[in-house]
Length: 337
Ligand code: 4AZ
Image 1 (cartoon, rainbow, N blue to C red):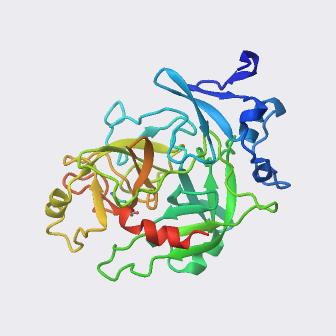
Image 2 (cartoon, rainbow, N blue to C red):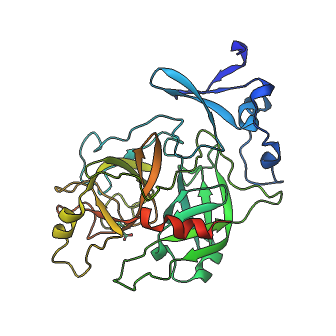
């Protein structure tokens, strides 16, 4: 490895390396920029690793080579969100602003209102062209016409380095939604419109896809997982977060969650999963819907849930309820082309 070719990216533990041509993946055709594709402007010398589709990330003392395109569930910018923000402020999400790109599979769905795009829902990037989100983010399929998907997003008032925006070409809404209760089957698959040259999401250290969890994947109670989103930081009022917030919360057993919601009109069904603390304080909230519950299992981050519902935000004994993704993996896969 030519040391001169090693380029350290500032402020993070990530290093991108220009690899010898022999080890480069042949992915150039997926990297042509569309004219005005809303893409980052890299100085030419910074782009070799991206063009080869490879990078290096720092993983507990060693630099590991990775492919941005073949891997899912990698977190090149290592970051574990805290369990509470440092002051334990009584904000709902109680999450802290994650470093840019540290929760790289988080997508944002925006909606056009009065001529401007506003934050609408979260989502999880699962392929170059697909986002998993919540069914309840859509009234009908028609709504997708006034929505768009943003990846590489952080502060909504700024254009971030790896930010890309896509129209939605199709949305698959789960037909079982509401058939067993107002919040059941709360899952949707969004297909994005490729850019003019056929390009979809451009993967980088800051923009990654998350793995779907196989049926056989063990998902244990108590496991600490990451939620991320641009949702409300307070239960009422329209407080817009200035950044992508993230927090670490544990999975709650099905039996415990069923008893926590025993007296509610909405039962906890098998395809729902709860996460959070009995005492509340940290939770997903309005606007986080559709966003990922990401758990590190067997060497990569898996999309274990998407934000679905809950009574209030951060209330004791009313944890956030997520759509379990494991039961829907074949539904998702069969709709991905
Ligand atoms: C909502 O309204 C919502 N505390 C999302 C998540 C939770 C509550 C409400 C969970 O989109």
